[in-house]
Image (cartoon, rainbow, N blue to C red; front, side, top):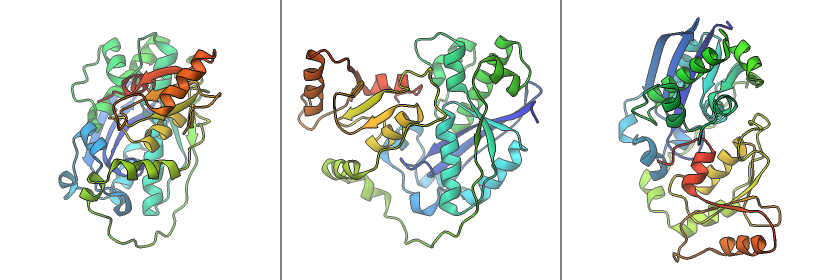
Length: 322
Protein backbone atom coordinates (compact mmCIF):
# COMPACT_ATOMS: atom_id res chain seq x y z
CA UNK A 1 0.00 0.00 0.00
CA UNK A 2 2.74 2.41 -1.01
CA UNK A 3 0.25 5.10 -2.06
CA UNK A 4 -1.72 4.93 1.21
CA UNK A 5 -0.36 6.24 4.49
CA UNK A 6 -1.69 7.81 7.70
CA UNK A 7 -0.50 10.88 9.58
CA UNK A 8 -0.79 10.41 13.33
CA UNK A 9 -0.38 12.56 16.42
CA UNK A 10 -0.68 11.66 20.12
CA UNK A 11 -1.06 13.85 23.16
CA UNK A 12 -0.05 12.39 26.52
CA UNK A 13 -1.22 12.98 30.07
CA UNK A 14 2.24 13.02 31.65
CA UNK A 15 5.89 12.27 30.95
CA UNK A 16 5.20 8.56 30.39
CA UNK A 17 4.96 7.95 26.66
CA UNK A 18 2.16 5.45 27.13
CA UNK A 19 -0.15 7.92 28.91
CA UNK A 20 -2.00 8.64 25.66
CA UNK A 21 -4.96 10.98 26.16
CA UNK A 22 -5.77 11.99 22.56
CA UNK A 23 -5.00 10.83 19.04
CA UNK A 24 -5.53 12.35 15.62
CA UNK A 25 -5.40 10.42 12.35
CA UNK A 26 -5.44 11.60 8.73
CA UNK A 27 -5.38 9.00 5.93
CA UNK A 28 -3.94 9.90 2.53
CA UNK A 29 -4.51 7.88 -0.64
CA UNK A 30 -3.00 8.73 -4.03
CA UNK A 31 -1.89 12.14 -2.76
CA UNK A 32 -5.30 13.16 -1.37
CA UNK A 33 -6.67 13.31 2.18
CA UNK A 34 -9.54 10.81 2.18
CA UNK A 35 -10.45 10.32 5.86
CA UNK A 36 -9.94 11.72 9.34
CA UNK A 37 -10.44 10.40 12.86
CA UNK A 38 -9.72 11.82 16.31
CA UNK A 39 -10.72 11.04 19.86
CA UNK A 40 -9.84 11.71 23.47
CA UNK A 41 -8.54 8.64 25.30
CA UNK A 42 -8.62 7.43 28.88
CA UNK A 43 -4.92 6.68 29.49
CA UNK A 44 -3.92 3.24 30.81
CA UNK A 45 -4.68 3.07 34.53
CA UNK A 46 -1.10 2.87 35.77
CA UNK A 47 -0.19 6.14 33.98
CA UNK A 48 -3.54 7.93 34.09
CA UNK A 49 -2.59 11.05 36.09
CA UNK A 50 -2.38 14.41 34.29
CA UNK A 51 0.73 16.48 34.93
CA UNK A 52 0.57 20.26 35.03
CA UNK A 53 3.27 20.42 32.33
CA UNK A 54 1.32 18.38 29.82
CA UNK A 55 -2.04 19.99 30.55
CA UNK A 56 -0.43 23.41 30.10
CA UNK A 57 0.60 22.35 26.58
CA UNK A 58 -2.55 20.68 25.25
CA UNK A 59 -5.25 21.79 27.70
CA UNK A 60 -6.63 18.27 28.33
CA UNK A 61 -7.51 17.37 31.93
CA UNK A 62 -8.58 14.21 33.74
CA UNK A 63 -12.17 15.46 33.74
CA UNK A 64 -12.14 15.76 29.94
CA UNK A 65 -11.44 12.05 29.41
CA UNK A 66 -13.86 10.56 31.95
CA UNK A 67 -16.26 9.41 29.24
CA UNK A 68 -13.62 8.76 26.56
CA UNK A 69 -12.81 5.29 25.19
CA UNK A 70 -9.91 3.38 26.71
CA UNK A 71 -6.71 2.61 24.84
CA UNK A 72 -7.87 -1.02 24.50
CA UNK A 73 -10.47 0.01 21.93
CA UNK A 74 -8.61 2.99 20.45
CA UNK A 75 -5.61 0.82 19.60
CA UNK A 76 -7.86 -1.33 17.38
CA UNK A 77 -9.33 1.77 15.74
CA UNK A 78 -5.88 3.18 14.96
CA UNK A 79 -4.75 -0.02 13.23
CA UNK A 80 -8.04 -0.39 11.37
CA UNK A 81 -7.87 3.22 10.18
CA UNK A 82 -4.28 2.89 8.94
CA UNK A 83 -5.20 -0.14 6.82
CA UNK A 84 -1.67 -1.53 6.97
CA UNK A 85 -0.07 1.56 5.47
CA UNK A 86 2.88 3.47 6.90
CA UNK A 87 2.46 6.03 9.66
CA UNK A 88 3.74 9.60 9.40
CA UNK A 89 4.32 12.04 12.28
CA UNK A 90 6.24 15.20 13.14
CA UNK A 91 8.94 13.89 15.50
CA UNK A 92 7.81 10.35 14.78
CA UNK A 93 10.01 8.82 17.48
CA UNK A 94 7.68 10.34 20.08
CA UNK A 95 4.43 9.17 18.49
CA UNK A 96 5.71 5.67 17.70
CA UNK A 97 7.02 5.47 21.25
CA UNK A 98 3.60 6.49 22.58
CA UNK A 99 1.89 3.85 20.45
CA UNK A 100 4.23 1.08 21.59
CA UNK A 101 4.33 2.10 25.25
CA UNK A 102 0.54 2.36 25.52
CA UNK A 103 0.27 -1.20 24.16
CA UNK A 104 2.94 -2.34 26.62
CA UNK A 105 0.94 -0.85 29.52
CA UNK A 106 -2.22 -2.67 28.46
CA UNK A 107 -0.58 -5.91 27.35
CA UNK A 108 -1.80 -5.58 23.75
CA UNK A 109 0.16 -6.76 20.76
CA UNK A 110 1.24 -4.49 17.93
CA UNK A 111 2.24 -5.47 14.40
CA UNK A 112 5.44 -4.24 12.76
CA UNK A 113 4.82 -0.79 11.32
CA UNK A 114 6.65 1.33 8.76
CA UNK A 115 6.87 5.02 9.60
CA UNK A 116 8.40 8.30 8.45
CA UNK A 117 9.20 11.53 10.29
CA UNK A 118 8.18 14.89 8.84
CA UNK A 119 10.50 16.69 11.25
CA UNK A 120 13.54 14.89 9.80
CA UNK A 121 12.13 15.33 6.30
CA UNK A 122 11.63 19.07 6.83
CA UNK A 123 15.23 19.50 7.96
CA UNK A 124 16.44 17.82 4.79
CA UNK A 125 14.05 19.69 2.51
CA UNK A 126 13.70 23.32 3.63
CA UNK A 127 16.22 25.79 5.04
CA UNK A 128 14.21 27.42 7.84
CA UNK A 129 15.05 29.20 11.13
CA UNK A 130 13.65 26.12 12.92
CA UNK A 131 11.53 23.15 11.93
CA UNK A 132 8.78 23.27 14.52
CA UNK A 133 5.37 22.33 13.22
CA UNK A 134 4.03 25.92 13.03
CA UNK A 135 7.17 27.15 11.26
CA UNK A 136 7.06 24.45 8.60
CA UNK A 137 3.31 24.89 8.13
CA UNK A 138 3.77 28.62 7.59
CA UNK A 139 6.43 27.87 4.97
CA UNK A 140 4.24 25.46 3.00
CA UNK A 141 1.12 27.62 3.32
CA UNK A 142 -0.88 25.35 5.64
CA UNK A 143 -2.85 27.20 8.33
CA UNK A 144 -2.46 25.44 11.69
CA UNK A 145 -4.64 27.31 14.19
CA UNK A 146 -4.90 24.78 17.03
CA UNK A 147 -1.37 23.51 17.56
CA UNK A 148 -1.18 20.72 20.17
CA UNK A 149 -4.62 19.43 19.30
CA UNK A 150 -4.06 15.91 18.04
CA UNK A 151 -6.33 16.28 15.01
CA UNK A 152 -4.75 19.60 13.97
CA UNK A 153 -1.18 18.32 14.36
CA UNK A 154 -1.92 15.13 12.41
CA UNK A 155 -3.46 17.23 9.64
CA UNK A 156 -0.36 19.44 9.61
CA UNK A 157 1.98 16.44 9.33
CA UNK A 158 -0.04 15.12 6.40
CA UNK A 159 0.21 18.44 4.55
CA UNK A 160 3.95 18.69 5.22
CA UNK A 161 4.43 15.26 3.67
CA UNK A 162 2.28 16.17 0.67
CA UNK A 163 4.18 19.45 0.18
CA UNK A 164 7.48 17.55 0.25
CA UNK A 165 6.15 15.07 -2.32
CA UNK A 166 5.29 17.94 -4.65
CA UNK A 167 8.70 19.49 -4.10
CA UNK A 168 10.55 16.26 -4.92
CA UNK A 169 8.19 15.33 -7.75
CA UNK A 170 7.23 12.00 -6.17
CA UNK A 171 3.87 10.26 -5.76
CA UNK A 172 4.46 7.68 -3.03
CA UNK A 173 6.09 7.52 0.38
CA UNK A 174 8.86 5.09 -0.67
CA UNK A 175 9.71 7.32 -3.64
CA UNK A 176 9.84 10.37 -1.41
CA UNK A 177 12.15 8.91 1.23
CA UNK A 178 14.50 7.71 -1.50
CA UNK A 179 14.53 11.14 -3.10
CA UNK A 180 15.15 12.80 0.27
CA UNK A 181 17.80 10.19 1.15
CA UNK A 182 16.18 9.27 4.42
CA UNK A 183 15.05 5.71 5.23
CA UNK A 184 11.51 4.55 5.82
CA UNK A 185 11.79 3.30 9.40
CA UNK A 186 10.25 0.13 10.81
CA UNK A 187 8.98 -0.37 14.35
CA UNK A 188 9.28 -4.04 15.27
CA UNK A 189 6.20 -5.99 16.32
CA UNK A 190 5.49 -6.51 20.01
CA UNK A 191 3.67 -9.51 21.45
CA UNK A 192 0.68 -9.46 23.74
CA UNK A 193 1.46 -9.87 27.43
CA UNK A 194 -0.38 -10.43 30.67
CA UNK A 195 -0.54 -7.18 32.62
CA UNK A 196 -0.96 -7.49 36.41
CA UNK A 197 -3.85 -5.69 38.03
CA UNK A 198 -2.46 -2.62 39.73
CA UNK A 199 -3.73 -0.61 42.65
CA UNK A 200 -5.57 2.57 41.78
CA UNK A 201 -3.12 5.36 40.89
CA UNK A 202 -2.53 8.30 43.20
CA UNK A 203 -4.94 11.16 42.59
CA UNK A 204 -3.67 13.91 40.27
CA UNK A 205 -3.29 16.42 43.11
CA UNK A 206 -0.51 14.28 44.61
CA UNK A 207 1.63 15.09 41.59
CA UNK A 208 0.57 18.72 41.62
CA UNK A 209 1.65 19.24 45.23
CA UNK A 210 4.94 17.42 44.88
CA UNK A 211 7.74 19.72 46.00
CA UNK A 212 10.74 20.63 43.88
CA UNK A 213 13.21 18.68 46.03
CA UNK A 214 11.23 15.45 45.54
CA UNK A 215 11.20 15.98 41.77
CA UNK A 216 14.96 16.53 41.81
CA UNK A 217 15.46 13.30 43.77
CA UNK A 218 13.37 11.35 41.29
CA UNK A 219 15.25 12.84 38.34
CA UNK A 220 18.61 12.02 39.96
CA UNK A 221 17.59 8.36 40.28
CA UNK A 222 16.04 8.05 36.80
CA UNK A 223 18.13 6.20 34.18
CA UNK A 224 19.30 8.08 31.11
CA UNK A 225 17.96 6.87 27.74
CA UNK A 226 20.30 5.90 24.93
CA UNK A 227 20.41 7.96 21.70
CA UNK A 228 17.88 6.70 19.16
CA UNK A 229 19.38 4.80 16.19
CA UNK A 230 16.53 6.22 14.08
CA UNK A 231 17.42 9.86 14.76
CA UNK A 232 18.09 12.28 11.92
CA UNK A 233 21.88 12.76 11.57
CA UNK A 234 21.20 16.27 10.25
CA UNK A 235 19.40 17.27 13.46
CA UNK A 236 20.97 20.02 15.61
CA UNK A 237 21.33 17.76 18.68
CA UNK A 238 22.52 14.60 16.92
CA UNK A 239 25.69 13.25 18.54
CA UNK A 240 25.82 16.08 21.09
CA UNK A 241 25.96 15.67 24.86
CA UNK A 242 23.17 17.70 26.46
CA UNK A 243 22.80 18.60 30.13
CA UNK A 244 19.86 20.39 31.78
CA UNK A 245 20.25 22.71 34.75
CA UNK A 246 17.29 23.96 36.76
CA UNK A 247 13.59 23.53 36.01
CA UNK A 248 12.14 23.95 32.52
CA UNK A 249 8.60 25.27 32.13
CA UNK A 250 7.74 22.96 29.23
CA UNK A 251 8.61 19.55 30.71
CA UNK A 252 10.36 17.67 33.49
CA UNK A 253 13.97 16.54 33.14
CA UNK A 254 13.22 12.85 32.38
CA UNK A 255 10.99 13.98 29.51
CA UNK A 256 13.73 16.32 28.25
CA UNK A 257 16.20 13.44 28.32
CA UNK A 258 13.82 11.28 26.27
CA UNK A 259 13.35 14.03 23.71
CA UNK A 260 17.10 14.64 23.43
CA UNK A 261 17.76 10.91 23.01
CA UNK A 262 15.09 10.68 20.30
CA UNK A 263 16.91 13.48 18.48
CA UNK A 264 20.13 11.44 18.60
CA UNK A 265 21.67 13.41 21.45
CA UNK A 266 23.31 12.02 24.59
CA UNK A 267 21.49 13.18 27.75
CA UNK A 268 23.74 13.88 30.74
CA UNK A 269 23.05 14.74 34.36
CA UNK A 270 26.25 16.69 34.96
CA UNK A 271 28.45 19.17 33.11
CA UNK A 272 31.75 17.52 32.12
CA UNK A 273 34.50 17.89 29.53
CA UNK A 274 32.18 16.03 27.13
CA UNK A 275 29.29 18.50 27.44
CA UNK A 276 28.25 20.21 24.20
CA UNK A 277 24.99 21.88 25.25
CA UNK A 278 23.74 23.18 28.59
CA UNK A 279 20.03 24.00 28.83
CA UNK A 280 19.45 26.56 31.58
CA UNK A 281 16.11 26.68 33.39
CA UNK A 282 14.94 28.27 36.64
CA UNK A 283 17.00 27.75 39.79
CA UNK A 284 15.73 27.74 43.36
CA UNK A 285 17.64 30.93 44.22
CA UNK A 286 17.19 32.89 41.00
CA UNK A 287 20.91 33.03 40.15
CA UNK A 288 23.23 30.83 38.13
CA UNK A 289 23.26 27.16 39.05
CA UNK A 290 26.45 25.25 39.86
CA UNK A 291 26.18 23.51 36.48
CA UNK A 292 25.94 26.89 34.74
CA UNK A 293 29.05 28.13 36.55
CA UNK A 294 30.90 24.88 35.79
CA UNK A 295 30.05 25.25 32.10
CA UNK A 296 31.39 28.81 32.11
CA UNK A 297 34.62 27.55 33.69
CA UNK A 298 35.06 25.00 30.89
CA UNK A 299 34.23 27.65 28.28
CA UNK A 300 36.91 29.94 29.74
CA UNK A 301 39.41 27.10 29.24
CA UNK A 302 38.50 26.79 25.56
CA UNK A 303 35.77 24.15 25.57
CA UNK A 304 32.81 24.88 23.32
CA UNK A 305 29.52 24.62 25.18
CA UNK A 306 26.29 26.14 23.89
CA UNK A 307 24.34 27.62 26.80
CA UNK A 308 20.71 27.86 25.73
CA UNK A 309 17.27 28.46 27.24
CA UNK A 310 14.38 26.02 27.41
CA UNK A 311 12.69 27.82 24.51
CA UNK A 312 15.82 27.44 22.39
CA UNK A 313 15.92 23.73 23.24
CA UNK A 314 12.30 23.36 22.09
CA UNK A 315 13.23 25.01 18.79
CA UNK A 316 16.16 22.63 18.30
CA UNK A 317 13.86 19.70 19.01
CA UNK A 318 11.37 20.98 16.45
CA UNK A 319 8.75 21.60 19.13
CA UNK A 320 6.80 24.63 20.28
CA UNK A 321 7.79 25.87 23.72
CA UNK A 322 4.20 26.42 24.77
